Image (cartoon, rainbow, N blue to C red; front, top):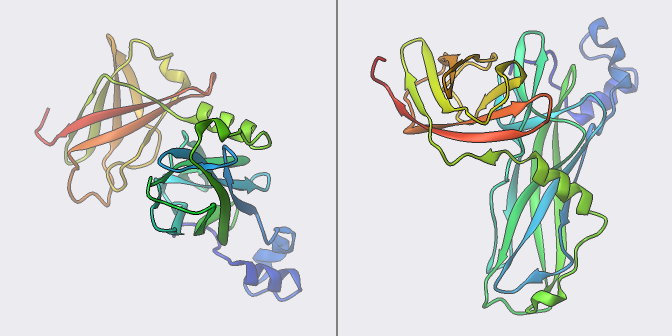
Length: 283
């Protein structure tokens, strides 16, 4: 992994206690907190609906200047994930990933999030489930980075009373601002489909752009890994289309059938998600 140092919480504790395992270059490591990210599971409403669904979320509270990673972490990093232990008849979706930010450190372009982050998921309860409540359990793992990186892990659980009545559901008032913010961070799906072409050296993408702002405000993030290099794409307008060119990834092996591009607006913080079928013929 291309990061300056990779430490775990135990190593940080040893450094903080005066044992410098890596020489004088880590003299300031004692100031690094052992818990740069705090994790918890929260729910948008106070009950789980039998035969229905609800939104839950993994909340990651980052210490200032630290970040964790998107579904494609970029040049280095690790995708945040949860391994679930669920009651029979209960299902949890994948994360609905918010639009990421770009973090550049020593020439590496990484994609992820800082601050107080919520990664939403959909929880569903089968109609056949019986009982008064359910408890979901999961092991969350992430990588938190600043000038060093610390892998994180948390054993999490969330107990939810069960109900068969929609009118019994009440919003979780304390969590509402987090879920509202998470909805605002979701990229808007664009129905119009773009196109992409993969050559020996580049990946060129054309996207419908009539409603998009000036290219100077845009950044582009590709969801698929090992497809493009992670430096900012070259962008230009061609009529009502936005043309992007990425360098092809050095780890490229085969092109998927389609790619997904998230565009973010640095001024308004709006984001859009495009899909583009891929051709491998020479343009």
